[in-house]
Length: 162
Length: 290
Ligand code: FES
Ligand code: FES
Image 1 (cartoon, rainbow over the protein chains, first blue to last red):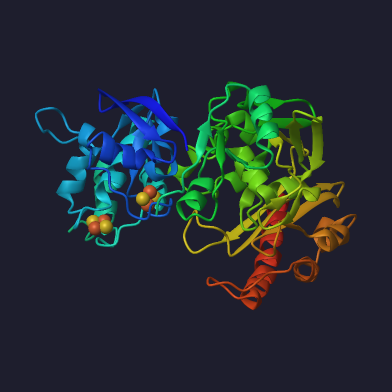
Image 2: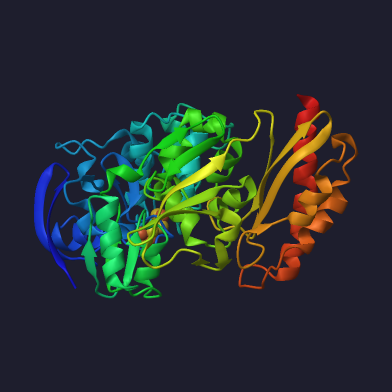
């Protein structure tokens, strides 16, 4: 089994490590880089909890090898708020709308929404479509939908924004 | 679970990748977008000795058009293809199917070549390639280049004509006339999941009659399945007098669905019959409306 020296920029910080070829990006972020905000649920591409932003794109970090991220820029949930703790708009909207309960799925959800919006997606339907890649076992998704409506300036039908 | 240990190489060119495959004597597995392979590794259903990562090969990305076909290089990301307006105009049926492949997050990594060449029977891309009459461009170090028609490529679930030392480098999709009708429907538990029943195809009507038809099922057997009897029955028929239910009956006769934890073969057949009839009918009506 081969080992590889890699260098990945995580949240603006250079992280070097020697990793086994089979190390996933998700495990690298948690175990080698110490960014434990990235959550691994299923570890085989089904739940979306592990989603991070790699070179601007939302990807499942359990479906990418760490060695493949050599030279890449990765943003995790830890990298989204401002240094003074001010939440990014997606985080704020999630908070305003009670869009999380246990919070296990949340880092992935927030990373997807942040990446998709940074890529120019501004419609409610576009964001909701991107959410099909996430499973949330707690919220029933309604809070997440409200957060999306808030983010896209669409108040939604009366009575739906409790 | 974690993958079993393996060696890893990331060649920088097709020639280098082919060398590695030839020398590995069957022990190597190609890693393209990884959206299917990585789960198989994690579940230890696949335990290769060596992974050959083709993501660092710039030369296998990109989309090119000629007057009568579109060449999509195998390493082209699904998300890139989906966002390409020129491709959307040239290959609307393909794009329609691609929109149903996985999720936003998996399309950012997943490749066209990976999806076409794995041969997952419930996946959209193999069936679209079969329906449209695509050809798969394959390279090996020792035998050079060959092209295989998509309908001759699939033997069974994840079993294809690809030899262990070969690499799929591109898919060639013939261009259908601009006014070709898109036939597409997928029944799945959640958007982005594998299909329980899926249908993809193209029908071209000229002078009031069906001049060309390519229709294929996915999720309805061990491979994508071309609905040959239905195609044959459609050809030459006046577009206004097509009995969609009868054609659907013929189309279902060509399938071989199985039972699994998601649906029975009986369910797949009966839903397939209705879905086929309705989808074909709707496609023909879009023409009358136009
Ligand atoms: S942990 Fe990666 S998709 Fe579930
Ligand atoms: S908040 Fe618990 S899984 Fe989504």
